[in-house]
Image (cartoon, rainbow, N blue to C red; front, side, top):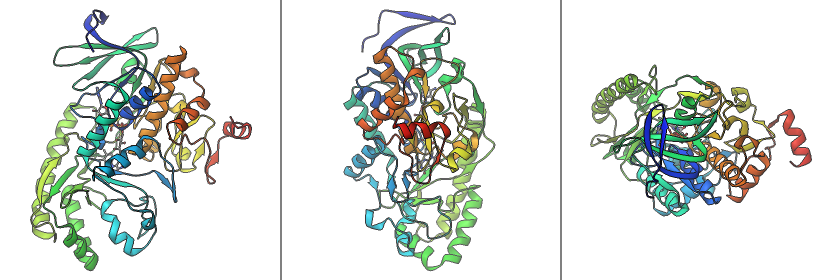
Amino acid sequence: MNELDLRVSSDQLQAPVVTRSQVLVVGGGPAGVSAAVTAARSGATVTLLERYPTLGGLASGGMVLVLDDMVNGQDITVTGIVSEYVERLQMLGLAIVPPVEDRKTSTELWNKWSRYGTFDFHAHGLPKPICYAAAFDPDGWKRVSNDLVREAGVTLRLHSWFSRPIVDDGVIKGVICETKSGPQAYLADVVIDTTGDIDVASRAGASYIQDSYITTLVFRLGGVDTAEAERFEQENPKEGRAINRKIKRLLGGAWELWWLKTPIEGVVWCNAPHMSGYSGVDPADLTAAEFAARDRITEALAYVKENLPGFANAHLLDVAPQIGVRQTRLLEGEYVMTKDDVTSRRHFADTVARGRDYYYPYRSLLPKDVDQLLVAGRHYSATPEAQKMSREIPPCMAMGQAVGIAAALASENGVMVRDIEAADIQQGMRQHNADPGDIPSANATIDAGSVAAVETGA
Ligand SMILES: Cc1cc2nc3c(=O)[nH]c(=O)nc-3n(C[C@H](O)[C@H](O)[C@H](O)COP(=O)(O)OP(=O)(O)OC[C@H]3O[C@@H](n4cnc5c(N)ncnc54)[C@H](O)[C@@H]3O)c2cc1C
C-alpha cells in the first residue's frame, strides 16, 4: 500500500500515515494472527503489525513447540484457526498428533507419546492420559501463519515496533510504530492489542496490574538418538531420574520432561532454563536473563553429552530468538478472571471463547478506560494466578478470533466495541468453526447471569 499524503501529530511527533483500515492488530503472535485473519475473513480491511521479522510470537520465535490445553476428556474444546494450523502443519509433515486410538491411559502409550508432550498435563500421577495435542515445528508455524495472513488479504508490516497509541478523548484512533524509516502511523476504527504485554492498552491509559512469572530461554538440540534415550530411561528409571535431576539442577529449573521430541528426527526442544526474578518488560532484566540462560545451557549441555545415553553426539542447534516471557502486565478490564473462575469452570452469559474447560467472558477482553480497543492473548484481564492456568497457545488463539469478530462487527455497523452483543460474537465464532463456549460442559459452574442466558437461549 502506498503511503497516504497525511501526517499525524502526537506529542510533537510527525509520522506519515501508512494505512487506514477498519481493524488494526498490534502483535503477530498466536492471538494476533488469529484476530487479524478472522477480522479479514469477516469482511473487514485489516492491518497487522509485528516488531520481529516473523509471525508466530512465542509459538515460533519463542520455540514453544506443543499445542495443548484444548481438550476436556475426549472432547476437543478449542477449535477454529488452531485446528487449521494443526491440519496444515500435518500436511507439511511438521506436526505430530496422537491418533484417536492412542488417546488413552496406559504405560505403553505413555512410553510411546510422553516425549512428544502430547498428554494431559493436568492429570495427577503416572502414566498421564495421552490426548489430542500437537508437537510442531517453529518454522512450519511461521509458514502457516504467512499463508493464512496472505490468503485472508491482511496488510502486514513486519519490522514495525509499536511505540505509542493515538488516543483522542478516550478513544483510540491508531498507533505509531518505530521503523528503520522512522516513525510511521496506522489509523483504524478498532485497535486490537495482542502484544502479550498490553503495550498498546497500557500506554493508551487502560488499567492494568503488573506481575511476573518464570522466564525461559528455550533451546533445541540436534544429533540426539531419541530412541536410545527413551530406551535407557524406560529400562533404568531410577538411574534416568538421577541424571535428569542433576541436569535440571544445572539448568536451574525445568519441567519434569526437560526435553521433548519434535517432528524432525534427532531434534529435541528443551523447555528450560526456567529463571525467576526477571521482568519481561525491563531491557536490563531481559539482557541479564539472556546471558544467564546461555551460561546455564552451555554448562548443562556439557554434562548431558557426557552422562545421558542418546545425547553423546548432541549439539546446540539453536536458542530461541525470542526469550520466553509468560507474564508481565495484565489488563484490568471490565471483568477480571480469577483462579476460582478457571478451576470451577465458571460459565458466563457473555462467554465468547473457551480453553480446556474454562470460559472467557467478552468483558475480560475489554479495557475499562479506553474505547475502540480490545485485547486478546496472554495479557487478557485476569489475576496473575488465573493467567498462569489459562494462557496456553490454543485458548489465546480462540480469544483472538473472538475479538477479530467483535472488531469487524463494530466497524461494519459503526458502533462501539463495548456495545457488541456477546451473542453476535458467539454466532460469528460458529461461522468460523470455532467453539465460542456458549454451551457449558456438564461440569461447569454456571454464573448467575449465565442461567438466564442459557434458559432463554440467548
Ligand atoms: C517457555 C514457555 C513455554 C510455554 N509452553 C507452552 C506449551 O507447551 N503449550 C502452550 O500452548 N503454551 C505454552 N506457553 C504459553 C504460550 O506460549 C503463550 O501464552 C502464548 O504464545 C501467548 O500468545 P500471545 O499471542 O498472547 O502472545 P505472544 O506469543 O507473546 O505474541 C505476542 C506478539 O506480539 C509481538 N509484539 C510484542 N510487543 C510488540 C510491539 N511493541 N510492537 C509490535 N509487536 C509486538 C511479539 O513480537 C509477538 O509476535 C509457554 C510459554 C513460555 C514462555
